[in-house]
Amino acid sequence: MTIKTSAGVRLLIGPAHNVSYGEDVAGIAAAILALKALTYIEVGEVEDAGEIGDEASTADFTALANRRKRKVKGTFDAGSQSVTLGEDPSDAGQAAVKAAVRSDSNFAVQMDYGDGSSDFYLVQVLSFRKQIGTAESIRKASVNLAINSAIYEELAPVTP
Image (cartoon, rainbow, N blue to C red):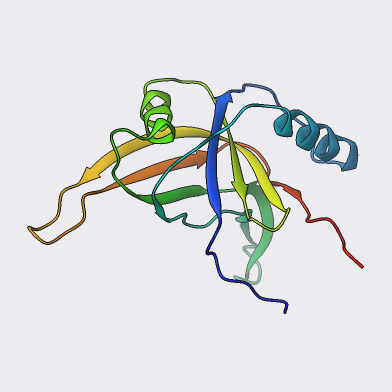
């Protein structure tokens, strides 16, 4: 089957990591090797891990002579990841995320897809906000991660 559910996907946070990697083949390989070697803590009770991935900005030009706006790709931005958690004050991963909010460093993140594939990237942890809700709501937290690197994809091993 070519499509999969997100069941079993895990979000992990690593240490502060302020290293830049190239985006050519050698840089990607170096990034994956270095980021895999770090120690990560699973962030517990993730309900929704949001979305990640590059999006190009648009650079515009309008010539006076023909009034036609032309657009070309500008810079790439991996965006921000909005994560929803079931708040668990005893969870070590959630505690690490809360601590990272108070730091100006980039932190390593791993999205483990449970099939041998993972994404690795660097983030600034911008927020950890409690969602109180109503009397019948589950107490949750929303986390905002600003992605500060490429998304380095490690593919699952190929099995015959």
